Structures are given as C-alpha cells and as structure tokens.
Image (tube, rainbow, N blue to C red):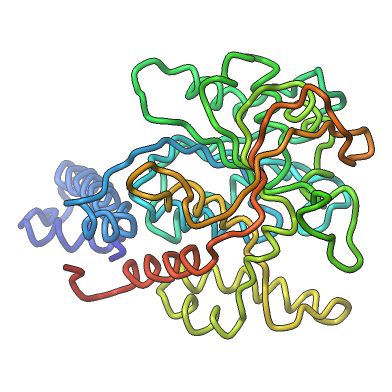
Length: 375
C-alpha cells in the first residue's frame, strides 16, 4: 500500500482538524499536522514489502547471520535481482549495502563519471520501489580500483566492513558478499587486517579452475569481475587469510533464467517484479541490434543469496550445492591463476542448487505482490 501527502490530508480532515478560513495559526497547524501524518504513513508503508515475508515466517524464522552486500548495481542488472531477493530473506540481517565501481570500458554503466555513486542511486531506486526507503545503510565504495595490492582505497564502503567486522556485541557470523570487484573488501583488509578472522567472503568471480571445468566458447582471461580490479584480487588471494567461498564463471553461468519465466513468474509480481523485469528487457533491447541475447539471461549474482539465506537448518551450510576445497592460487598481474605453495584452503563452488534459489526468489516475489492474507 502506498501512502501520499493526499492520504495525510484526508486523514487530517477526517480528524476534524480542517483549517478555519483565513486563520493563519490554524493553517500552519494543519500544514504541520499533515506533514507529520504523511511521515508516519511513510514509515508504516516503508517496510510492507519485507513485512509480508517476515510476517508469514515470524513464528519460525529469525535472522541468524549478518550480511554486507557489495555489488556494482549500476552495471549488470543481475545484481538488482540478488539485492531484492536478499531484502526479502528474513534469516539474514543486512547490515549495509555498498555500491561498488565499474572499470572504464567495462560496459553496462561504466561510462558514468562515478559508477559507485550511480550504484547507490540504483540501490535507493530499488528500495523505493519495494517500499523500503531509508531502511538500510547504503554507502559508496571506492569510485576507482586499487593501483597495487598493498595500498588500500579508503571509502565509506571499506569503513562499513571494518566497523561491522570489529563489533564485539554479537556472535552472529558475518558474510561479506561481493558480486563485482573486490576493491572494498581488499581495502578494508589492508586498513584493518584483523577483520580476516571475523568474516567470511563470498565472491562471484574468477575464471575456471583446471580439473573442475572448461571455459566457455570465446572466453576472456581474466574473467569480468576479476578484471574490474586485479590488484584487489591479488590482495585477497595472495596476501590475506580471509575465509573465501568463490563462485567462478563456470558456476555462476549455471544460473540461467529464461525470459519466458521472467515474463510469467517475475513481471506480474507487482512494482518490484515489473522493475526487475524491465531492468533486463530494456538492456536486451539495447543490445539486440548488435548482440542478440537469445531468450535467456544469466542471473549470476543470485548465488550470494543461495549460499547465505538458504543454508540448511541443522549444521548450517549451503548443503545442496557442491564445492571443492583447494589451495588458493596466486593471482598474477595479468589476472591468471598461479600456483601458490602457501595458499590457504578456499571453497570453489562447482554446482549450485539453481532450483532452490530461483523457486525461493519467485515465491517471495509472489508473497510480496499477493493481495490476500498469507497464513
């Protein structure tokens, strides 16, 4: 339900507080009361989208982990799907959302002057669409990537990660989930190395590993997200001891969603469904003259939800997705993997439970859009 100033005026008048003709004092009182009621209405309506899912699960679901979301929301719109899905997942407590940068010439929204700022604007646009304005802390990451693996790019995003990781008033595990480059988490580590023992990093990025998967036809090295900031990837892989769950290209490319599903399962689900669908269809329409996309789209950032919000109940873990534990490679200056004799063990996901991930996303969007009571 959307409340407006017109609604507030109606409520004010209903309370028999109509201003007397030409009475300036009453006019001012009426105006102030109208604004106050409008504010209260906004607060009441601001969390409705989330409340529908929370209310349906309130008796048996509560947050059991903290999550900081870091993504290039002004770039590939798959990040908007991941963000909306996370916002509707009551088992996670979202402690902040970081808008991260794109690299010049990286496509999508990389032509803007400050892509990190533009990413935050996209986040706030989605929050407004979902009726969640001002509910979450939204901050900019560094507007540019790191120059070397040993020098941080300080930013609000990096400071948010440090602040949350260093808290001593909670025992809930902290996950920093990154769907783009690693500039902000790498910078946070360089500024405060102690965070490595206080969080788990989940990253969508990196090319295939030998012995696990072959690269796709016409592949690029380095992979897109790794190439957004190679020095930051070097910080995380070569220098840090941060626990890492990696979802490389062969795994995130499994997250294929058909446009027929998009038009029948997502678009009809209210303002949020329309917004998300249009973010994809408008992009595909722009690309169609010179890069026909077919009839599917890869929602490659959605595993960030699967691996956090959809962990198993007993022995919490992404139990239905498969990974291998391998020694972390070193990242070379050209973005390729190199053997690293002292590399720490990391998780490398190779098979994702796409059914669970997309079925849950669709169900939550339907719950939000539903006009009937959800028992």
